Image 1 (cartoon, rainbow, N blue to C red):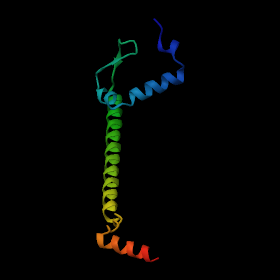
Image 2: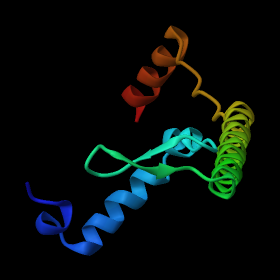
Image 3: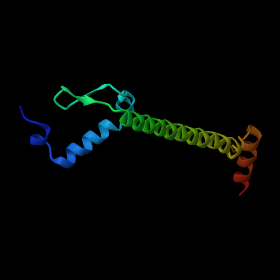
Image 4: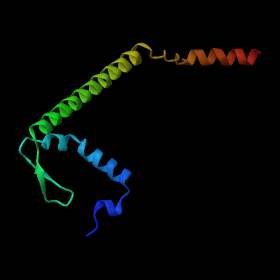
Length: 110
């Protein structure tokens, strides 16, 4: 059986593992004393207290960053709604039948 190192270049493998381990699900699963699972699917040690604490801090920072982005998006949406209401262009006045008749008279005399 080939290992990931035999199939993928190291930079690609690092990027893939980095993306996977940065996920919220992975960080939330790092609980002190939990089994670590290796790339081969077999137990590969246990999560230490320090690793669990670091994961909890990263998870908290991720949650805060998501909350900040949601707040900014909400504020931007509200601002766009307010500016759309106040800056709505005035609709052109519709011509009445009397306006059309007057325009026709002017055109005939010109």
